[in-house]
Length: 546
Image (cartoon, rainbow, N blue to C red; front, side, top):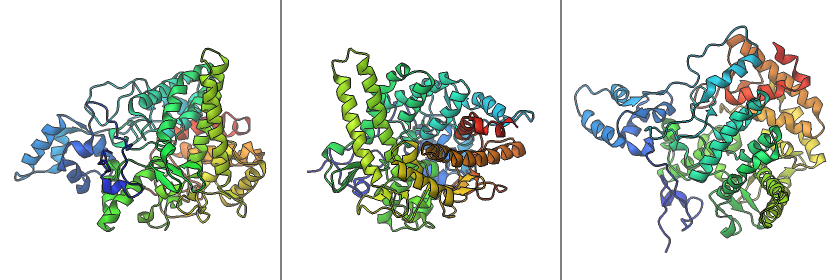
């Protein structure tokens, strides 16, 4: 007899969309005394979100209750029955509404872009959080950098690209603080959530922790990075949960075992409810679907948010219809490249600690085991290369089919992490130059779907991965050309607006980027980091002086 599901916020029916409930299903760990807005204030949550009193659903979930949630729930049940009740007024009386990160900061006109970014670190840095404050924010013990605007908390994959710039600014102390925070989240929650909010607990984001540790090791020394080895192994266990007992041709949470026995990874979310921070748009789309199909849509929307490309034609069978999201059915090439890098990093750090002695051989065994994992995953990633098109693609795990009709910049990940063969790397670089290089840099996909992770937009993290990826395979000329175009675009935008934007239109460089569920944000952590990293290159220095 199967046990009932215990995953918070997901019913057995929802979980059965992919795999029957199993005794090993995990419960989402929630910090004590935390506030979960979607579940702690009764019908008030849905009423506020669906009433549209806030254009952005994220504003209400970031609001801080002035009283205990149960008290507010009772107060609302009583107040809403009175004549003249105004929902917005009730919310303002009972919640402290959030302010955008960096709100009130004004650009100094005389500053160059590089000077502006260096000044922004202080603006975007949050001090260590106070514990015991009722909020959806999960407190972190050390200072950290937030992206900016509506993104008032730390974000997992953003932080790697932010760190690239912090290193160039000589702020390895802040890099260490952020690594300490991520290690703290792994120890206390079992994984790094999408961001340090309770409504993000059911998912993670692209696992860049190993890349961050590697960056820190290169900026300081390997010995200083050893403190993160245990956290790296624990995070890896989160991503590989269920792999040891998974049958061929099946998936569980974030792991998939292919018919040939090879284990790879996918994106997932432990809940099949509308995203609290995007509640209204999720519900509105869900209502256009048969009731039996809604949980599947919500799960796929959440899994796409775990990837961070929310949303893109990359994940949709019909690039114009979000209802056709199939994220949990795909093996993403870039996710598996990241986990390959994690395996290599764990193996290298364990071998380093073994050489320092005193482990009784345990670290040597860890190093050999993870090196074997990396070798097996590399072969599986190489099999995601299509020799006809000369490009890497995602794979549908049910059928084994490569999704060759949806090329994207995800193909650069095997180059960035040194997985591709020399011939593959050169052919991918040629395809990137021919089909993806635009006047402002590399475009994310070739589809103009209206989603923000599609044409005509370019994104700082993907610019960096692609620029450095092609550089690793002998195309320094292409890397420098793309880097120059990108820096010229963001520099021109900075001089015109005084802002560093979250994303840019790289096709029409005179047009502001758009698409997606919210307006383009400024601040902006990963844009700042990639800009400083590119400006540190001698070939780009002249562009960055203005």
